[in-house]
Length: 418
Image (cartoon, rainbow, N blue to C red; front, side, top):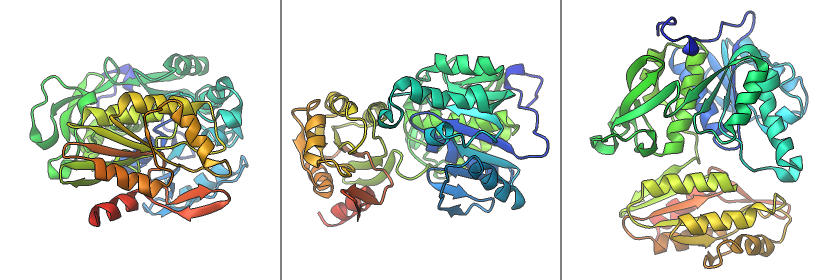
């Protein structure tokens, strides 16, 4: 883009002697943004690597298991290994734990993204203030003073992010309605006209197959045609946050707009597993009140019939969020099936009892695979079954054991052998 067109959209000055670094933090959506960011970096022609909850993606695009150490040497060493392999840009997911433990102390960040600050991890941090403070340190301490921060216009606790960015002296770009970067849908799923619909009505599919959401990406004063290969509003926002981060890092807006249709979502995040007999079966990682609410609201907008949700709560974690999650499920779903998540060493029946306080009319089926099968049996054409909490996890933590379990595999097996 013409860098003189809009001073606010101008990219950061290239760092000298090191790769360009983008980092994302927040309560929910971090992995979606981080994985989209590294993909976009590669799609616009950069040699890029990434570190997020899926693992380490090297410059060749190969995913490796990550084994983080609680040491300020961990990230610099990871970055240096990728630089030696040719990386000129790095995308990082800034988990609250590595921020709290000082792993970013020697990592200068050029572009920092926030997905919103909600309630989570109180069992570790003790208070919301401590939890949010660790997250905000990405902007107030680790973002370079002349760097760029990115958040949605409706970012939860956005005022706190603004204050942290201002204290650092960095610039802030906003994404969404009324923001510096926004998307307006023109054609939705199946090429249907989208009369006045914006990002909150996005449709499913792959742009390469004509099944994406076609629309206009506005970047400052520039308007570009693009296709977003995502279905739900939160997925649209996450993809736009990643796109804005890459543009702020120096990629031409035209190249980013052309690349968006090729971005693959991370597994387990509002992932559609089956479309069979008019029934949609999906999984998501939502394991806290805000994430569950967001997932249910997003799926509700795309569901013609009933919304059935299967979920539970993790053991040995913040107990106060359990009844709230039950209340959210009861308010937003037509059928609630309560089951076990990862009970760990906590009595599963106590966890379910505390969740059930918020959804007393739910159907309670302790064994998770049985709960999923029951929901699928109850579903009718037009319905959506959302299995929430574990997403792409392949084990269930029961006591001290790691038992094989994959919600996606259970869904596929149940539908293959009804």
